[in-house]
Length: 186
Image (cartoon, rainbow, N blue to C red; front, side, top):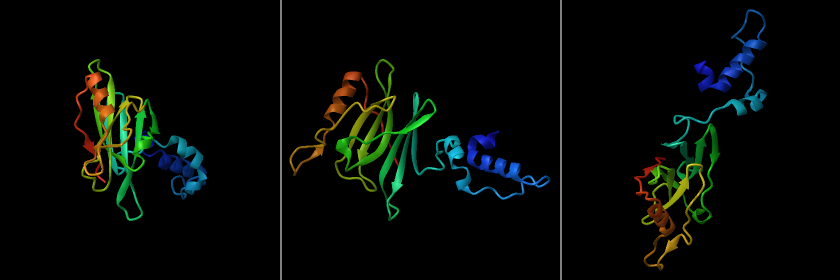
């Protein structure tokens, strides 16, 4: 049973191979080509595990966050994919429109004074980061973006800083202490 939980595609391929083998030869028939079972395995395949993804996972109350490094052509990660897993469903979370030139680089869990869970996503640059670009966004436990950074930068060209005003105001209103962020290792 544990084989089915951890590798449903393999288990299905072996089962199909055993069923299609002539009498007395169960288990010796070649597994069907991957194209033979895509509709079945796509629905049965669980979310990738930490060993299968290059990135990080963050357990927050009621949800699991996945931040996956997406390597560029040269193999250097410059973008990430952010996903939330809740109630057995996993879905992508789009980056804020104003962060189109940046990517998620870190995750944290947070809780307000009422015990409501939130998560924090830090946006910046990969692979090396930058001197001042640390934008923080607050999301509810369902993955809904609650803050913005419009405009992303404040100050003049000589002394710019990230605009985290809305984030700072909302966490203060909710009684949330800015959490320690865990960063992706690409």
